[in-house]
Image 1 (cartoon, rainbow, N blue to C red):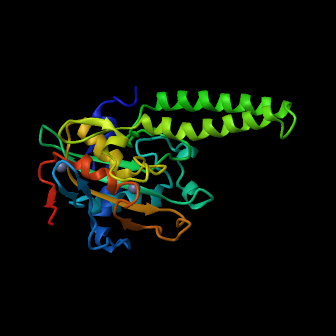
Image 2: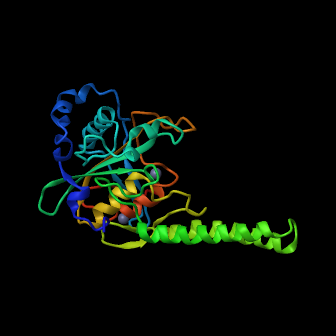
Image 3: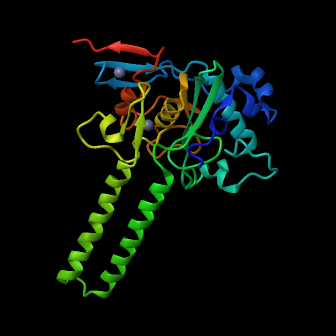
Amino acid sequence: MLYRGSQAVYGHPETHQLSSTGHATATMSQRSSHAAIAPPALMSGGYCRRCAGEHRLGPGNTLDSCRELMRFFADRGTIDLLSTRPSPDPALSTAWLFGQARGKMFGVMECLAPDGSTVTLRAFSGQYNGLWLVEGWVPPLFDVDEFNALCTDTESRVKELGREIDCCKPQSDVWLALRKQRRLLSRNLMQEIHSLYRVTNFRGETVPLAEAFIGTNGIPTGAGDCCAPKLLNYAAKNRLRPTGLAEFYWGRENRSGSRRHDSFNSPCAEKCRPILGFMLCGLIGCDFEKETQ
Ligand SMILES: [Zn+2]
Ligand SMILES: [Zn+2]
C-alpha cells in the first residue's frame, strides 16, 4: 500500500531527488537570485492545550529547498518528481495550477532521521487534480481507500434518491421528504469524512482531528488537508524529527488575492493554526512560548 510505503518513496536525502534531474547544482548558484522573498516571520505553529503555550517551527534550511522545487516546476512543468519518463503524466502538469482550478500551496519539510541523516519531505495542499496520492509527496491524514469507499457509497445513495425524487410529484409530501433526506446525506458526509482524519504528534499520540482541533465553531472544510499537517503527521508517524518547514504558493492567484504565485506563506490561521499546537507537541528543538497571563 502506498501509505506504508518505504520512507524512500516520500523522503529523500537532501538534494538526491532533484539532483537526478540535473537541477540541484544549477540552483545552488542561482538560489540567491530567485525572485521569491520569504516574509520575515515565516513560522508554523499553534497553541497547545497540554503545555498551555505555543509550539512553533521555523523554516530552518527549507527556503532553499522550496526555491529548488519552484525551479523544478518552472523548468519541467510537472509535479512528477520521480518520473524518468520523457513525457510525464499529464494529470501532474503544473499547467492545471494556472487555469480554472487556480494555484496551490506546496510545502517542504526537512527532518532528521533516527540514523542522523537528513530527509526532505514534500507536500501539496488538498488533492492534486483529483489525486490524493502522488509518488514523491506525503499522503493525506486519512486512509484513501476508506475515503473513496465512503464517498462512492454516499454518492450512489444520493443518485438513487435523485431517481426516486424524479419519479415523485413535485411538492408532494414524499417528494419533500426525499429531498430533505438527500440534503442530510450530503451534510453528514462532511462529518463522516472528517471522522476519517487522524493526527499523530511527536509524543506518539494519535487522535481524531476533532480532538486536536482548538475552536468552538466546528472544523472548517479542508482542515487537515494543508501542507503543514500532512508533513508533520508523516514525520511523526515515521520517527522523523522536523528541523524546518516552509510553504509557498504556485499558480494563478486565489480568488481573494491573498495568495500569489511564487510567494512564501505561513500556514493558514483558520484551518492549520488550530491543530498545529497539538501536532508539534513533543517535538524536541522546536520553539515554545508559555502563555503569559
Ligand atoms: Zn492551512
Ligand atoms: Zn504541547
